[in-house]
Picture 1 (cartoon, one colour):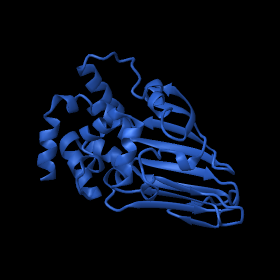
Picture 2: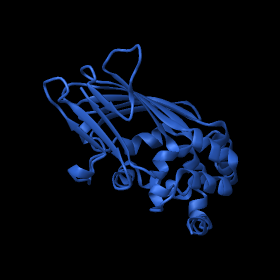
Picture 3: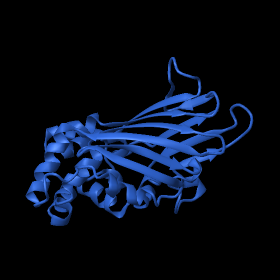
Length: 251
């Protein structure tokens, strides 16, 4: 049933022409290096690039659509504009390091406000609590079928459309396992793109104001200061959310 509904979806030209842009968004591996300061201010440095297969697919589709080959596959300016309007964001600085890669910094006035628009306290993507004693400050990040669909419209209207084009279950409201989703991608777009999505991940390394007293969903970085945490989040798990993802740090 899921596959049949997908096939009907991609027969719509509006979605089909978004496939290269969606591939750009999904099939890259991102590195985030951040610091959370006392009071909740934070700075996140982002580095991301497209996989070889994804870049080739995007260029082929853009040529078919009559777009110039010189156009960036990841356009820093296009990404920066809606991101600057997201709740909690104080400043955004992004630049292209190549047509298929970008890097930059996102400055947050308070990490507890990041992407908080339109959500109740119990449904928030990030919950931040500040305390004075060791172990009384915390951040909890919850990615589930309630929180993630509320985040997407805050980033841009186009993003939800693009995710629909590549049939991400979390956007389509469908229940799917990770393996079922990757198999669907393989049947629709081929093994190369499916394999890139399967291998892609978001890696985050975050420094906190004091030594970490508890961490869930990640690890304290070995050989680094006791306030540094690392997280590896497989992209396919984010797109499917077969099981809710929860990350917590206390310091």
